[in-house]
Image (cartoon, rainbow, N blue to C red; front, side, top):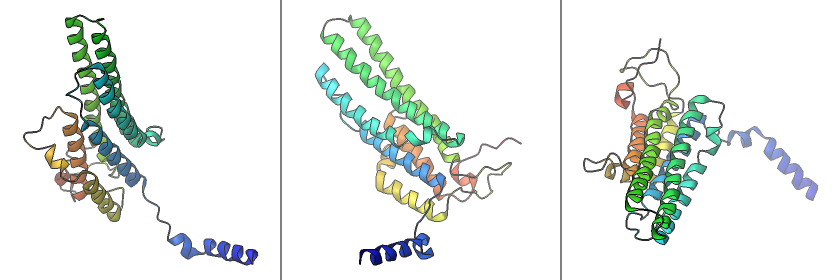
Length: 236
């Protein structure tokens, strides 16, 4: 009986119908999927409470929670930063490194407030180190901001000259574009509008993240380069 069941299983797995049901997604879709998930987790991290911390222990607790969440965000990019495809590896490395800078800034905040409470810092030294950590955090999200257009280009097939009115030659299928758009809506909901409104601070991490995702969403819904806002021309 066992042999009969085994034979039937082998036959089923070797049938063309079985293999036809396996869907293989494009690298562009897979990368886009992981990037928007990384951005979603980053936004979750930056929404955790932090600015109200008043003691070293509170800073350590709040910064620790944010850093644990940011490490989770970076895990979505691990396999991509070592990719042999430079067009994918570069933006993945930029985002991964940028998030790492924010993690380092929070670690330095923990050390800073501990030293302050122990009386190891003057008021001027404390203020200088607060500014230094703030600059590191700004550098972190500036790297993410710079990676946004590179992520968009991974979704488009390389092309020589093109005009703004040309149709975009996407490197993923229409079904994959729809799937990514649905994933963006599921992950972010109204946050993209909330964090990119006129009253939002353009230097804040939540704005940088939301804007990057909003541009990806705009690209996926566009037909021509002009609609997507990609107006940089490729070199001859």
